[in-house]
Amino acid sequence: MSKKDLIICRCEEVTEEEIKKAIREGADNVDAVKRATRAGMGLCQSHTCYTLIVKIIHEMTGKPIKEILPATHRSPIRPITAEILAKSKNM
Ligand code: FES
Image (cartoon, rainbow, N blue to C red; front, side, top):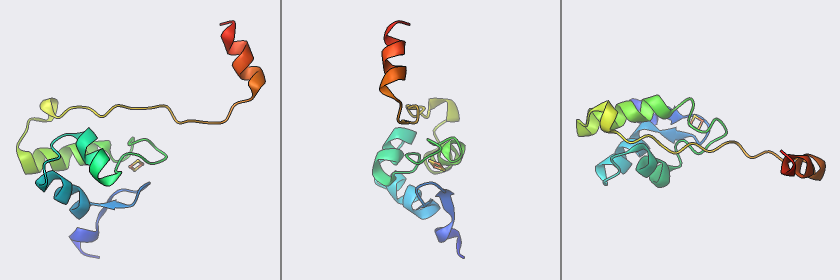
């Protein structure tokens, strides 16, 4: 396995090279990398790959880590019953 094949986002199987390609093409924050590669859109919602993506952006662009914009996190969507939904209306 070469370094090009190194998986950074395990959920979406996005390699380091795919992320670096997106950065070379202008993605300079986590959300832009996410849109270009799907890295961070998997089941863990980037809890595993987020810091690795930030590190790669930092190494390639020289941007301070504090300036690399955080990705927006969304809660995982799970099916719920209508009963739970009805009860939440009274909350
Ligand atoms: S490892 Fe990237 S979304 Fe889970």
